[in-house]
Length: 132
Image 1 (spheres, rainbow, N blue to C red):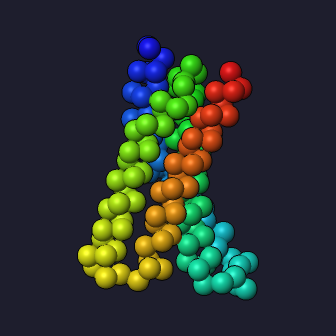
Image 2 (cartoon, rainbow, N blue to C red):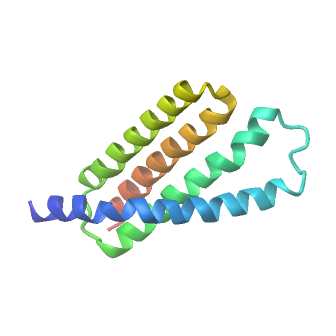
Image 3 (cartoon, rainbow, N blue to C red):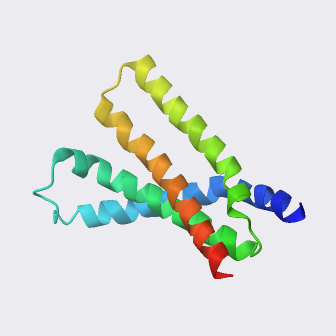
């Protein structure tokens, strides 16, 4: 019971760590995309690529640091708060899209970034748990 409670408690760190990781990932992705190596890519990938990569970086950083802080982490319980937060963010994104009549192209990359951050976080915590 203690491991489960501490796993949920430590997952609170997912929010700030994911934001920091997404900022770092966004800078790195914008830097890579700035070289015009992807000139022949479809517009959707040019627009959404850096945002989705930032979500992956945020989820990886959060998962990596959380597993380093608490090695007995139960990934199922450590994913509860991030899942709730991601559901709220996706719901808020859809609401803002509908309320402000935004282009779908502006909203989808942000939603995919939130989902990518959660999926990467769960993957990293699950794999690190198996390593210990």
